[in-house]
Length: 146
Image 1 (cartoon, one colour):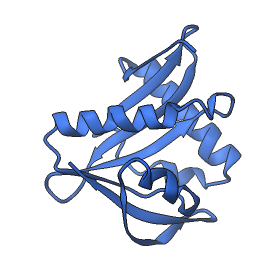
Image 2 (cartoon, helix red, strand yellow):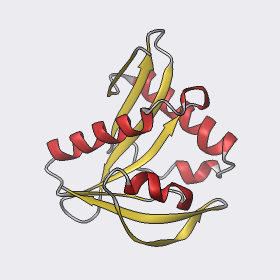
Image 3 (tube, helix red, strand yellow):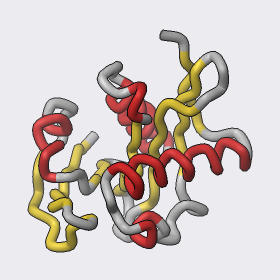
């Protein structure tokens, strides 16, 4: 499997990431579209995974937390045809690397409850259950300290 993973380079790639999020979160998972538009995209660093044909395979973003020295990982999505290839883990690693570059001491995320063991295997600790579900999906608050 040939692919490239990096920060988005232009508006076309930004739009590709948004379209992937719509496909995965809104269409597949039934999460209301307004939940995806949280106003953090402009202040975030976005990662994209492209195959040799420059089609998007996965993406994610790193946003600043209101608290100092904490980054927020979110909108991590892998297209349906590319799941099970380890791309989610790779996106997380690149986002964590960007967080280290930005001198964050920790990163937090709010994954769906059913993803808890996946994130625990990546070194994240569960802090609490989030009281605000994403559509029908209960969420957790998890953190990884560097």
